[in-house]
Length: 123
Image (cartoon, rainbow, N blue to C red; front, side, top):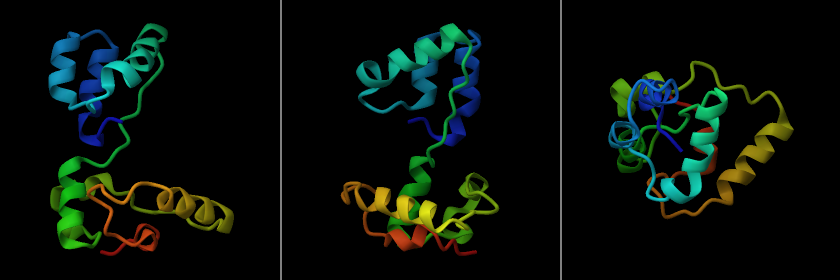
């Protein structure tokens, strides 16, 4: 539930280098962080387990939503968070991935995109 551009902040918190209030201010957690995610983050911190900030930054999602396309032109500097290669060699993986996307609510910033757009990245 953390965005990729805050990985350094997440890591610093897990290592005990910054206090929780600084972490929360910088990491932009979701509104339900306290009840739904904090217990997991604190468990990971206690046990030395990494937490991966894997979500696309919100500003990138908003750019994609406004333009209705995924491209390096639209994403600009946030293109660094797009993988160089997306492996859809497995039909089963692709089928499950698309089913997951189709099962998500359409009201979010990416809601207007066709799920197929996620499997066919554009330059």
